[in-house]
Every structure is written in C-alpha cells, then in structure tokens.
Image (cartoon, rainbow, N blue to C red; front, side):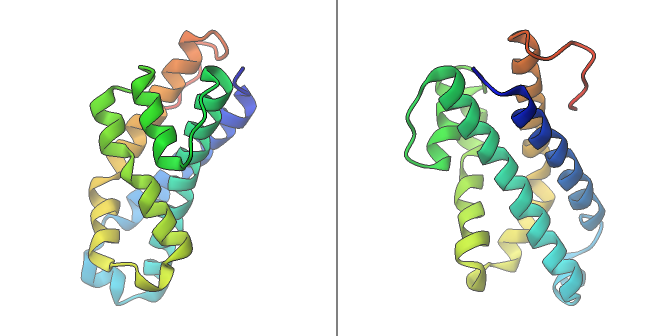
Length: 150
C-alpha cells in the first residue's frame, strides 16, 4: 500500500519547484543563459521537479500495483497502463525521466534550448501529474477530499 506521507511530501515539494519554475519562466532564453545564477536555478528546479515525479511514480506503481519496473520512464508509463494516468499523458510525460538523467548524470552537455523548452512547455504536464496523483490518493481513500494538490 502506498505511503501517503511519502507521496504527499513529494507532491508538496513538486508544487514548490513549479512555483520556482513559474518565476523563471518570465525570462527569455537569452536572459537565462546570460545569468548563470538564474540558469543554474532553472536547472536545479527542473531536476528536483523531475525527481519528485519519478519518485512518486516509482513508489505508487510498486506499492499499489506490485509492478516491477526497470527504470523511471517505465514507472511513469506503467501508471498509464494501469489507468492511474491517461495513457497518452503518461507517454507524453515519460521523457521527463530521461531529461532528469541528463540533468543529473550528463550535466555537462545540457542543451540550453531543451532546458528552456521544458521550463516553458513542461510545467503544465508536471502540474497535471500532481493533480492525477492527488485524485488517485483521494479516490483510494487515503487522502481526504479537502486536500488540494492543484
């Protein structure tokens, strides 16, 4: 059974990272890349947001579905196969796992344009993921209806 505290803590963290990303989304790519502090902040916020998503996905799919996954991408895709996420949404979100790996392990070759694209266009998917997970917890009866994770 899913550990509600584990998931809700990560959902709350995801909301905080999204707020940071919202702040930096006001800047152009040139403004971000010309200010290394802003650029590194975006990298780190995206890395942490992606980590929260893959942590939640891995925990839920293994705890509630007893699924075995080989990597983070499979964990997200499995949530789509189980119906917790709409399958097309899971397919669209799954590449965040690969992007996470680039930010963590191949940080020397991060493409600023790709980073900016995820910052600008990926935030909505990260928010949607949080809504799906919160809904799943409420429908499972482990989270009360008043809890707002939007």
